[in-house]
Amino acid sequence: MKLYSYFGKFNAAGQQVRVARENAHLSQEQLAAKLQLEGLGVSQKTISRIEHGQRVIPDYELIALSKVLHVSVTWLLGIEKEDA
View 1 (cartoon, rainbow, N blue to C red):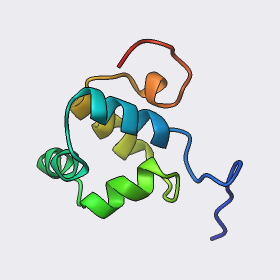
View 2 (tube, helix red, strand yellow):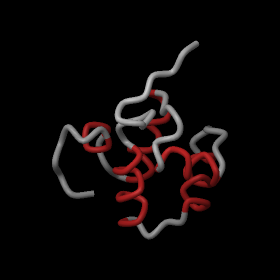
View 3 (cartoon, one colour):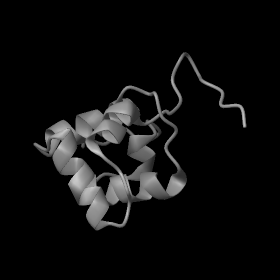
View 4 (cartoon, rainbow, N blue to C red):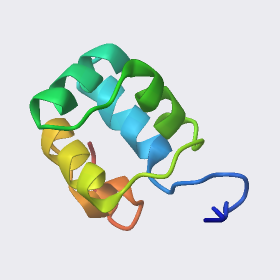
């Protein structure tokens, strides 16, 4: 399966994930641990790759990220302009 990038990024939410994580005062490792409690098998390296746009984010991971970071999926995608 060929993955396509948009302006060199494989996701639209990585920057917003970083902003929300930092606003929540979480390290990448802490965020990964919270996501693991939600049933996702992610590591600190996975969070880093998401934030740098080097990894595709499946829809179910976006939902878990929004839940754990207390922001909406639309905010993570840059559609909604609320504060994190």
